Structures are given as structure tokens and as C-alpha cells.
Length: 207
Image 1 (cartoon, rainbow, N blue to C red):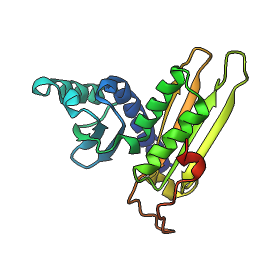
Image 2: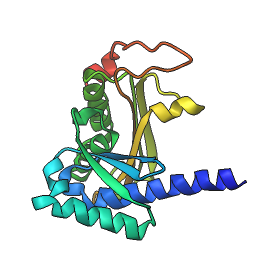
Image 3: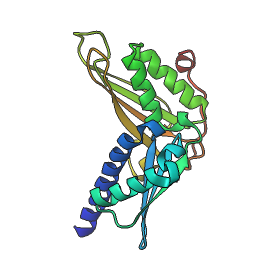
């Protein structure tokens, strides 16, 4: 029970840190965070579009973030490493935010989702799934869900840890829309099967 409790606590802390950094580093293009605890320190790797905004002048910003994480989440000896994102179209959080912004501009939800899937797959993803739930039509319409996927996306077992996932919320005039994006990045190796890049369906390719 103690081991299970510690595992849950670690997951909860990671989620809280991720939410904190996503708010603090939105202008830096925050995408995701990886946390590795060692006997000496807690290594926090932050993936962003603009590392300079995280580091700040003379390292002031990163020093403040480190101190805040230490105090807010009781993390022992945190060390923040900043990594620049190589391809933003393979980062679920950035893709989700882009979709959310297009929803807020009033663009057609189904076309936005299909177009985003096409671009993600064209950038080498082995699989991608986008789910949008909420007020996807005009004012007064009932809430509904649109789910589109291409390629291989595992839904159960330890292999789901190899899938990058993010969620955000869009706020158009007619109501909130939840946007969830899952991406299997290129080069991912699954222990139970060999996954090859698939041809993009015509319905997605022509979006």
C-alpha cells in the first residue's frame, strides 16, 4: 500500500507541476515536462519553443521557477533543464492549443480536426488522435463529440506511456470545447508489435 500511495503521489505532483509550468511558460511555448527523481536531486526537463524565455536574463527566470517549485510542491533539490522543441506539430499540447484557437475564431470544427491530423501525420507521426467535446455548433445546439484518429494509438497497458497526450480547453462565444490530442511520435518502438508509417486516408489528406 505504501508503494502504491507513493506512486500516486508522484503522479499527482507531476500533474501539478505540469499545470503550473503550462501557465507560467505559456509565452515560451510550453509543451510538456519530464520528471526524474534521483537520490541526489529531482531533474525536471521542460520542453518549450523558446528556451530563452524560460532561462531569462542572467538566469533570473529559471532561478525563480526552481525556487517556486521547491516551495509549492515540496520537491527536494529541483534542477530544471530546458529543451527546445524540434517539431511543434509532434507536440500534443501545441497542436491542441492551435486547434483551440481556431475554434475560437469560428472555423469549422470537423475541418480543423482533419486538417490538424493531416499535418501531424505528414510530419512523421505513427499515429494520432484528436477528440473535441462540447459546443461544436452554433449557439443553442447540443454538445457533441468529434473523435478522429489515424494510424496506431494504443489504448490500454503500459505501452500507452509511449503515447504523448495533452488536453486544453477552447472558449468560443457559444460555449467551452475540450480538446484532447494523442500522438505517437516517429521512431517509437512498441515491445508487442512493429508499427510502420501508414498512408494518410484520402478523407484526411484532402481536408
